[in-house]
Length: 99
Ligand code: SF4
Ligand code: SF4
Image 1 (cartoon, protein in one colour):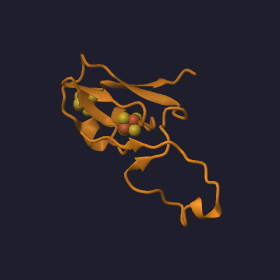
Image 2 (image 1 turned 120 degrees about the horizontal axis):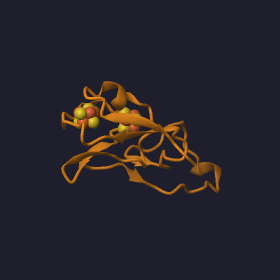
Image 3 (image 1 turned 90 degrees about the vertical axis):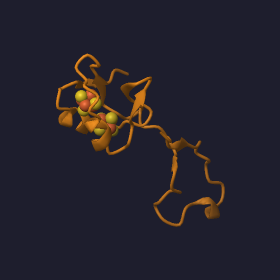
Image 4 (image 1 turned 30 degrees about the vertical axis):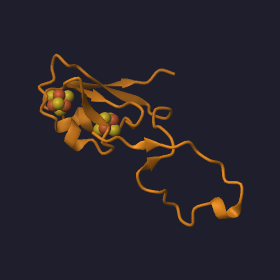
């Protein structure tokens, strides 16, 4: 699966370097989400039946299969909990982040 590309933030040095609107060029993420997430989804693979409902409902597309098992890309997961809410087997627990 193709992943978003993270691009390092280049501090503008001239007024012309600033974007005209609030949008950012498609296909790039300026920063990962991990620093501001308060809860992270943790998948219990013993309960998981590989239905991939979590994959379909994740608004950020951060659930994938890694070596045949469902996994979360924590660099881009925002911790919204939709996957945990929709999992039919209660296989996803939202665990508070520890800093
Ligand atoms: S929704 Fe739950 S059971 Fe289905 S693949 Fe995701 S974690 Fe596994
Ligand atoms: S917590 Fe939200 S962003 Fe993270 S994997 Fe689940 S649905 Fe996706």
